[in-house]
Length: 245
Image 1 (tube, rainbow, N blue to C red):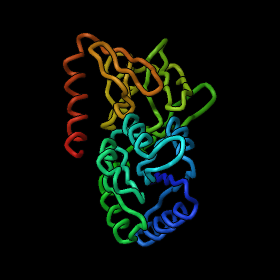
Image 2: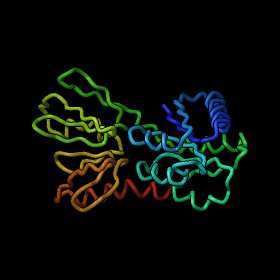
Image 3: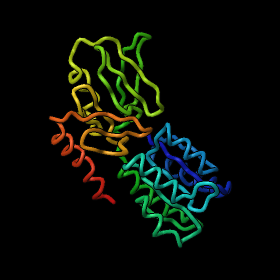
Image 4: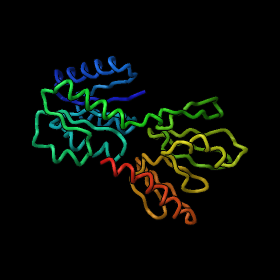
């Protein structure tokens, strides 16, 4: 399901954009969850634990500007689609640091917004909505792949660290970690960087020769012998995204 966040500190503007999006979704028979944020700091807090495919934001807002917010979104998620909707045209050049798909000037032209939504959604990869089912000592847990930060094999079990900091521990597994991880690794966002670790490349903050640093500061080692292959795989993942900017 498409996840959309709208952020505008002016209640009337927030409702207008929300109504336009509702009309667009109905006209295109699209299922989506739309969350409205009246303060940029609330959205900033939200993106620490949840992801959205599409963000529609004002630029001039108290506490955290739309430009700062866009940069933080881009730091956490290279693939999210960002649309700016503002009455201030002078920030357009600065806004492109967040690689938005469009910069709309208020009052918003409905057809221009609809055209932008069509383009943004066409670029959205909904494959992360896939899930994986984990057998734990407490029963079964169904996890969205987009919520997985990394996986670690330890003491014949697999630890799934989620973006909200929660850790899910599987029951003892009999197969190898590579075999167990196949359902996750089928998703192009994931990479096995060590015999005992795999990561969600969407959540990488820093790449070094010996490790990945993920969102939240978690460090995952890279096996020395695997470094060339891991480097190439990660660069190949990044390059298409760079080409879209």
